[in-house]
Image (tube, rainbow over all chains, first blue to last red; front, side, top):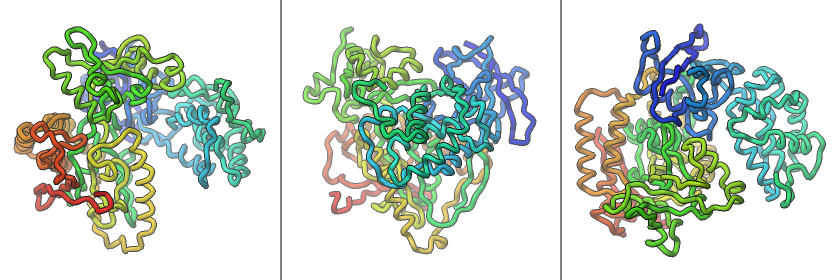
Length: 245
Length: 359
């Protein structure tokens, strides 16, 4: 099997980007873009102009959709390289890989997503004291905990940009986990942070809903987070036994 | 300590104590473990070559149920057997549920080392095919929907197989490194000012980690290490500083050589080990080392590999994940921690008594 990989190359942030085209051959129908990038880097190859391909810089950790490191644009749509099966992703035989655009580029496919963690710090999105989770919040909290903080939702969001005070759906997912077990002492401050940094900035386009590589039920978590933090409903996040989350 | 950000290349100097959290040595076996490719094993190799001691480096955990996906081994959770999954092999063309026959009490739920070893043995049999399957077809739709939905999605996505309808071919795979940087109960390494926590260090798990128990090292051990560092009022500035690797990103490790070393290691450190295969592995390692000149980064990897093999050769008994076919019994005199240290350019192996409260 063959695919034309087009990779947006940049040696560093200041470099002029150029699209390098590589004819990549593979044997297994389940081969992912992540595997291809490893393969090319380890074994070397030439591009379609016969030029040797310099080591492609990209972020990779788990290779199985558990960490979110390899988020990038795949044929223009944000996704994970390890979630991208070449055979399925190819359009007219081409898979184009580019860095996410909402974050500063470091080199090739690597972007600096520090802002995501900094935003969580600014919201003080952590438990300040030990707390106990009620078993009825388990399923929703579990779903929120599947968030990889990969940034795909921010990339597709019409409201998010790295400099804005709106922190986007990835911050809301962390907030969901917190809101479901938030101790009384943190409520006032965190409800305010949630309102300012999420609720007031979200235009409800829900573009993030279909892009999440973890397939999180974003809408449902959003409804429960808003109920808890904005509408102060005590029963938010509590799922009754007979009710399916 | 001077740290280089491997993505930005930025170099930053930090003062005070350092806690190493570099994870299991997955990169020693590239593509052959269930762990992350970012845990390259390079940190352990670098520190070991500079005199930091290792504990139990021979103790590798093979998980019974892993599948090969694009570029790595992917874990099939133990919960799949907990929910009723059954292991079988085709013997004379018919499914043989070997774990249930061999261990009627616990069957498929025996500890990881036992299941992995039995899988290895049944695959060697002349009357069997060399492939073990995990049969999950009997699980209820309720289980798939509420308890194992992630697993099914993973198998569908990466293998193109629906575990509700067909058995899943599984294979033993390296899953966890019980050994690593030797630390005391406060998580201090043998180098003053340097601590280690998480899978990179040797603590808690002895010869065999139990399922779900890596949290112990990650959360509890991480807290202990942090407490130790926070409460340390010794003059950390005077502590010897390990030399970190400050080469630019382009100076990557030699991928082919790392693979060659990993194949040699697998030869000696498989599920079943013996003196002869370990001797051969050490010999091949020395041949590879003598075949050309290597940069310091690679030299460190050779030294680490040698320590793993020598430790396995020195432990002349079977215990947990370390099974020696030439010494199949557990020998109480080896109820000790294997300590590997790199001194004067050579690897020394010795055994240290367990602290009294553990013994």
